[in-house]
Image (tube, rainbow, N blue to C red):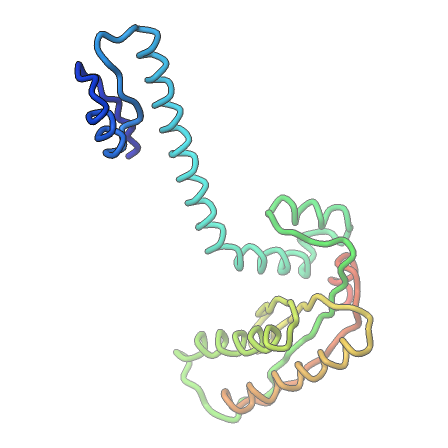
Length: 212
């Protein structure tokens, strides 16, 4: 609830006005008050409440957006790779803008497919969801540790697609290969699985769905 208080009083001493301000009063009016002055002050109070309400709504929206942004990003890449978003540059950027996602038109992307081919330890079916999330977290964390910007998607059971913001530089691609190998090793150690990583070539966003 947003409240703006206006004090009407017969006391003209500054001490009263000072106390009113200290208590958060918007204004301090002496009786008798002119109608125009009162309406002007009431208008100020209404404006203050409107601004506070709008700021609160914006803050709540911002908090909701921050909480849901990873889901929005994942949905965007899933839609793009599945063909739900046509592979036309202008349409892709229009959808990204519509979903409040920033995308630099000069970016290239390197797709990496991680496919688990064998589990060397039997896991209970009830653990499957937690393991899927664990594998995804390892892939995401190692990208960050090595300074890469990327997104990890679970395409289907035991199959993950990693889309990394990339370049054509040989040093970058070599480093990305090292990161991919480390991801395989980490998952082997923690989740006892053998997996393969298939790294594609750097492509534009419009070429991405055709390259995976």
